[in-house]
Image (cartoon, rainbow, N blue to C red; front, side, top):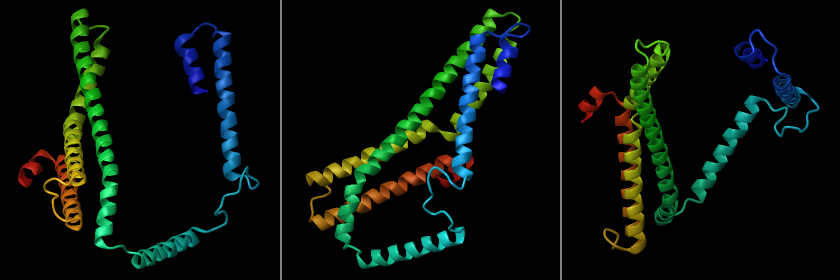
Length: 231
């Protein structure tokens, strides 16, 4: 409804709004009203469209059930705890998923960094173009203020969040873990011992890499002075 009123005052102030626009806003308003009504019915009506599985249980009872289930899980895990070699083999099988996760996060931060850089380029070029086009910079003064504010915010965000450095560290860790997985599968150095020794060395190496990755992320979260003290 507010969008309907805003569109009328912005585009058709002092004149009649077209019937097609009225009809479009009317249809959208009816749709959202129907969806809101359905949501209230599902949430608050006793005879809802379906019954909730835990309906009638108190929060304290749910917490007690969760604690009991956790205790049963711990007892069962202790009874069925596999040998270290089996756990290391299972760890090795889960490593490709960890590599995929690191690569996805690396691509995400790389895309964020690229979008920020392109936005900086366009804003900087826009300031130069508008300043050259308007002399004095009117009516482009407001646009210049917005572009300058955007550049300041993006520059501060890049310096604080450091998406490029995060993407590089994640990609480097993923490549190192993948290299160790390949070496273990091929039986090449440093995995040239027995299977149990190779699995133990592999698990130790990968865990050290993950610890180093977490340390690098923590260093990126620290202020510049704090990072110098850590180094």
